Amino acid sequence: MLDINKLRNAYNVIHRMSQNRHPFAEEELSLEAVQSAQVQEALTDAAEVIAVYGKIMNLVSQSTSFKVAPKTSKAVKSSFVVEQDDLSRLQPMTEATNITKLVKYINDTFADKEMHNLTTVELGRWLEHAGYLQLPEDGRNKIPTEKGSELGIVTEKRVRQATGEIYYINFYPQAAQQFIFDNLPAVAEFLAKEKEEKLADA
Image 1 (cartoon, rainbow, N blue to C red):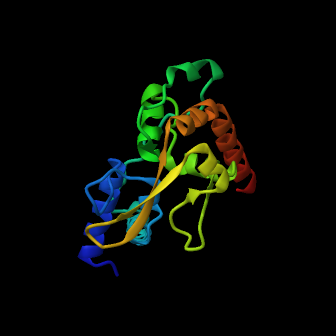
Image 2: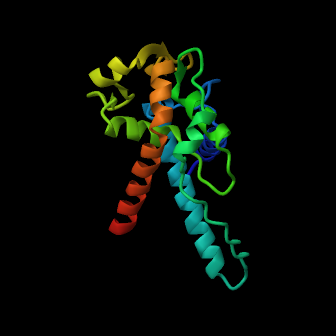
């Protein structure tokens, strides 16, 4: 049975993350934060709450005493895509930046209500696939490979004030930003291939 605290915490986690905020700290949501043990545990609780809610709604919909309004169909958004000719619209930031701000800048530049936004997790997967990031033995925050370090990606150690938990943030200087911009068509192709493989396995 779900207690009221778990229900309240699940709501807070989902609400803050939907606003691109860290669920337990006053900072932006980042790939490193999502991969932290604390956030993963909270997401597990949130998933449990959502599953219970789904069962309740299923019972209600089967009851003769209640009628649940059917969900309105939503327009299917197209996958993230960037044309080579559009890359000139992106200019590297002067200072090294983290992946959260970098992805936000990309999405703001190519804002399109009919297209899915790029996410930090997706870009992180591509960087790992391309050999620039790796998951260390503790399986938490991705860090640069030797190839990534040569590109200029640097890692800073941080301590979360609320919990004392140690985590790492990667920063991307101008050269690394430009590399990512130049390869956005490859990122889009990688994500499209991932989607096709998932559909094939379904």
